[in-house]
Image (cartoon, rainbow, N blue to C red; front, side):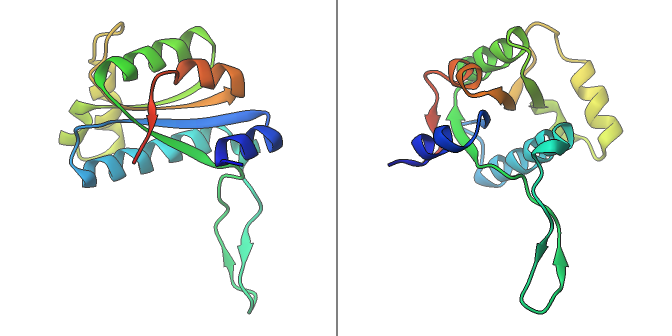
Length: 144
């Protein structure tokens, strides 16, 4: 049984992160990390309990379900983003202009300056009912 089949049996929601496939690896990792925190922040009910090691030290909570990471071209990113809006999914976004900013307020300003119907997306994360996330990510391949 693959991970997606196992997830379908356990969770009624799904988290998918789509990242532009031609970015340098460091940018893919950076975008993925930012998008994951966006989903976690928007879905506190999806967070697991704090971790505790064998000597009792506490560690931060993690999202309580797997996140699927997809490599996507610009068209797939736009399609997933539009489907996320149409289906009312929780969304986190990262646009190319955010690579040149230095803080959160500048990131929000960069996103606000993007064309509303076609932002220059380099990453989008979605969370919601499995069937809706599956439809939004249809055609995207899991990141190698």
